[in-house]
Image 1: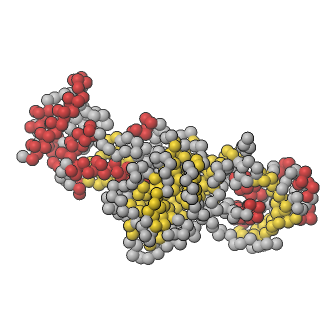
Image 2 (image 1 turned 90 degrees about the horizontal axis):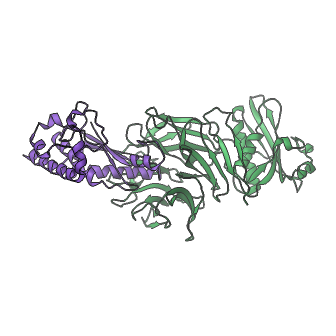
Image 3 (image 1 turned 180 degrees about the vertical axis):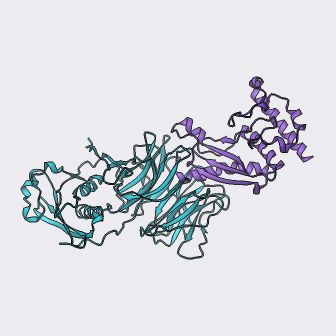
Length: 184
Length: 436
């Protein structure tokens, strides 16, 4: 029963997201058949969300064959969340995606998640370790408030030590200010 | 009109991994000095070049090229002061190496004041032959102190992190230690995971740093003589920013085991080793502790006011005061040996510089550097210069600037990105110089 309710929440959220995203979503190809879909891009679904909610056993549809987390639509769920300079606030879009991660983790209590917090190279290294932790914490506290057990989550901040993009401009920096969730 | 000195010396004596030094700017009125090539009883190699280069790097001296000298005296009776007055020299340094039957070497030197036509300082140093560079740095220290009145800091070392293959999955992080001129680098520890925040114990015999070698950050203390490493028990979350107290008995650090980063101190001499919490500020970042010279307070970075600023906390009373008020990003502060002046990372118009501030006035901080993305300032033990990390053409390099902002030089490395410099305290690497 709980499970149904959660799924319904997701469906509502996704529906809301659909409305926000607008017509662009109509051109998207059928998502489920795209195992190589880019992980970083927010997947947009074209199917009615309502019907998804009642389909399929969670165990088989939460992850693809390469253990990547899936949206209820079957598309790969984003695992990177980006931040503004000096900030650790998650966007409304990220919260919707994290809600889906929370649902996967509450359905799969044996799965563990590592959250990595990262910063761009600007500023001091130790302060950035702390800022990266704050970003990771933002993700963790959202997930635990959505029902994920704290014992399912590990967190590590790398500060500015592991940039995604080694460049030294705003384009690189915006990719490096991130939290990453990794399923174990 | 500022006088600009261009000088480049390429590291060739110690191999390719050494840091190279490029001097950008010197002092307005450097003191002219002649460092005459030292006479040698056999081919032991001449150390006058090392001495000259130390003096050049200080920005306060301008040694003349040996090609322009009129004579090459090595003993007092060969000195003709007129030769050096003609060249406009204020000081003259001569010396000689003597090989010893035990395989060691003895170097004697004499420093003359040219206008007064008298010897002002002399010394004799004996050491194993492989320590020629140590002898040279010691003589440079003696010369510097005799002329400026400030203890020289050439016989010091620097720690830094060298990253090879940066931006690839084969990245290697190496903790390196080199002479203050970048020569004789050696690797103290190497891992494929990030290393940062190296710092020295006050006696120069141990270092502490942060290593991700286990996949999580932990603080490591390493003995330099034996290379024995000891990983401190690590707590969930951050374990970072280690800083030895001035008496060497305690380590200040950052732990986030209680949910957010807080400053702690820990007795490292006792076996119990329980961290004692210093700051209590839920939801704020408190990090980057540094000790006041008297060991009674810590300075640290905190964003408890919304933006990172520097604060000072009295360890006995917990009384805390904010020290920086200009700008919206001030971090990683270090106090000069006088306890009155502060250097730190200061953001101005989006650019990160190293700034200097007098704590007893309300004046704006003075920006010392013209580079960008500057971080990790670390002071020479005599407080005259600081080394920091910056970027040059997309590459991490080290750079040095004098506290008055006048003297600047860079230390790039051909081996990779270099960062996180830490200048040692005074090191007693040789027995004291004996006067002649």
